[in-house]
Length: 100
Image (cartoon, rainbow, N blue to C red):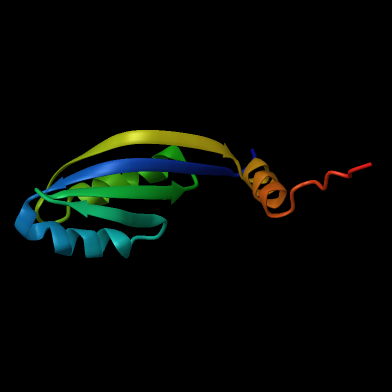
């Protein structure tokens, strides 16, 4: 079975007074990145994982953090690692167009 790359985004609802601590704890998780902390205790987070199970484990760990009320999965995309690497290589080295 080919290795997979799963990219997902989640919104984490946190009590406002616990938002900074939760954001710090989430940012320390492997494959997690906190992109924005909104007023009222919402955190915008992306996850890069190897499987759907890994996404669910991250969400469970986040839900156990002090002050976290709930986590909502907003987006999920997956592809094989070889496809992702091929796309990244193509973006880094686009084909040259010759002009005659």
